View 1 (cartoon, one colour):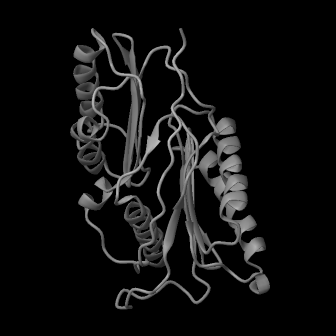
View 2: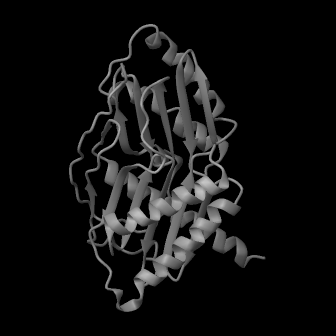
Length: 286
């Protein structure tokens, strides 16, 4: 008898926007969303899960992505492409303890933090498609297209598609006329599949978030985010503004959310902007 997909709905929350600031490795561990199956984990899988999670955590100290199957349980983790091996380990090592509190003993689960995610499922558990929308965050503030926002976003998205396929690690950050983009694909995708996933995420961003000044879209095998600053990136000393972010519900395989998910999105944006500004500084010294 096949396992069923569980469909849950997320609540809507608004939080104030934050300006770019220096962030610590601890920020990578902020919860963005969780997904928990409704089926309970049965023996002998209950005993097999801990060794699987331990092996994934150990691997995260050496590389940013790994997928393995042990004793009929498949496990996958991935860290954001700009994390060091030590930061990757610090992020992934937080998840096993969180899984028990967030989901308990279930047949499949996924926990997405700002800097990494980890998922597992019993072999045979039904999966959603690679481009299934798992989670989205759309900025409350809208952009007037008098300044050509749609054209800028299309150009930035084209740059993002090319970047994830040519960068070597399926990860890319960049900027185009005050519009900052970030994207990453699951580490075992080929370049073509990664490009197709990112393109799907971009198209879904346009549909789901419209002309929002910022957005983040998580699909099963990739995610993207963008932030538009029509007046330039706020300075480090600026006061927080009044823009809010709201989360929308979306059907998926066992999705629920923690109370800090919107904050997690903001942290991702800040880490991304820090990475872009660091690259700019490095280019300027050449």
